[in-house]
Length: 356
Image (cartoon, rainbow, N blue to C red; front, side, top):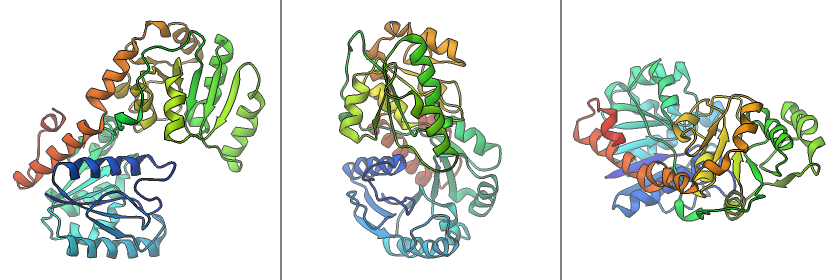
């Protein structure tokens, strides 16, 4: 197959530091190339992924109206030049506008966040059977199905080789918070749980110094650092992330929003590290209660579960990722979807046949 992928214009594929979806696209390209497919990519000009053809976006900003028009033209030209069998977009649905009208070219639109009702509705109406949607979780797909279109859940993935399985950790192993440091990720709750249970807590991730996020850092996080075993270790690269998660008794990220997926949860499990979070968004699809970690609804529950971490078999955590969230599993699912879209002349597909 000849497959043309698109990424948002802001970050290269793969990203140099943060950029979860750009990592997913890079893994997808690598996996598809290893299976003999020809891959084109429309993305940031500094992308270094091993695609067959790179088409740089003209516009650098997803939300800028002029750049949106420029990028629509970029994608139009890329399709004309690459002649794909199928287009798979991880960027803006608007860029596909010329190909939604009177085009039988199969198109897959993937969402990593809450889909826009208006955009989904008009995209489905214009694209008809040529446009299929995927979401990074069943939670996201449920939101999309309420509006329009055919949706298939295909989870995000991790590159297993980057994460070292640690079957055991020290008896005094710390808890780890790894995410953006903002209220919806629950770093303040992680601090409270660590203090109440007498556990060390290592906090990693980027934070803001301006606006509400800056106020949150100054008032809810900074006063607790370097006291009671609470430590901020900064931002981490892939090597540091592997080391940080591998030494942890658990990763605790008690979210306060509907998480679309959260790759970091799968990364922790890949190290054998159980997860403590909340039953919101896609978390119940990632963490099996009492097997891979605990999903809690309040601080009291979280404290109780911290004292029961010895009941979690870390082998189960690693196995969970190997079977459901590894790159090879997710590439299989996308390849199966592409094949069936082409073979079945874009007719509806049983979602269970993709998940199998």
